[in-house]
Image (cartoon, rainbow, N blue to C red; front, top):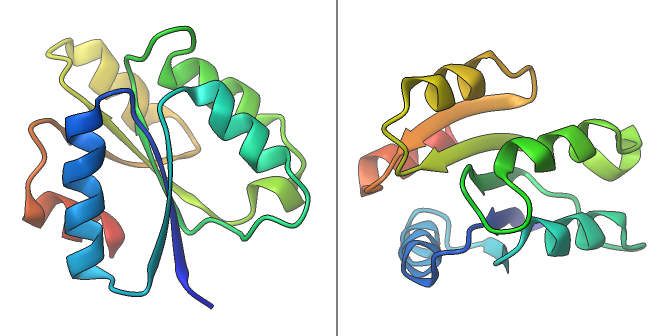
Length: 125
């Protein structure tokens, strides 16, 4: 079974960069990219989807923030969530964003943008 990743990120450039790096690090990687968190929720609720191994989740997005996504994600049935590790990513310089991400029980990591190869590799380990 392929390694499956969701990228929930409104920046086309950041999504492109993550996709390129993930393709190099994990050639078997199946990537699902979503510009809006609502799209990711719909995908997670869709029958027959493949389970996710990692979710890269931007904090600041239009319509629904990464933290709002986590509230909905937390309430999903366990079989819909699976065992995905969530890594929050952000340009935010607000220390509260990083602290809130690190304290959240569903978040396994926090990466500051700009992202680089080594940060992304470390998040996949």
